[in-house]
Length: 114
Figure 1 (tube, one colour):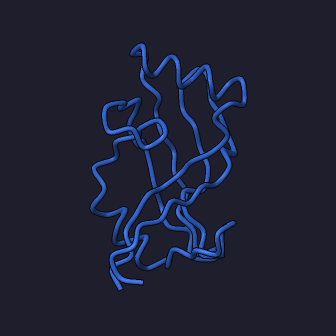
Figure 2 (cartoon, helix red, strand yellow):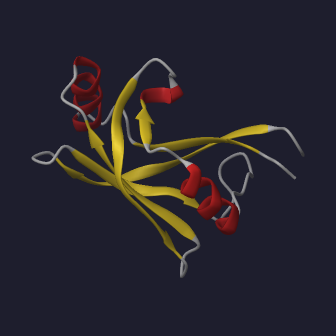
């Protein structure tokens, strides 16, 4: 459905507290809970344009970190993402929520173009 928006989420797989890094799949070409699928080739193109900003709960005013690496995983048609969570007050609050299991995963927001 052209022009519709979607949000997809995947669990955090690894946390490196010393480096303040969080890792996991950002996309995976399979249906989510709502039945949405993000195409792998489209994900590669979109991530190639992404400036790497990480926000808590998609809040445009709450930048909490930046991507340290993202890469396509062709065998699973997924995007693997690692992010650094800043030492800013907002970043500290986010890192605490990750540690406590309140924030459990990555979530991407997008728009269906065709």
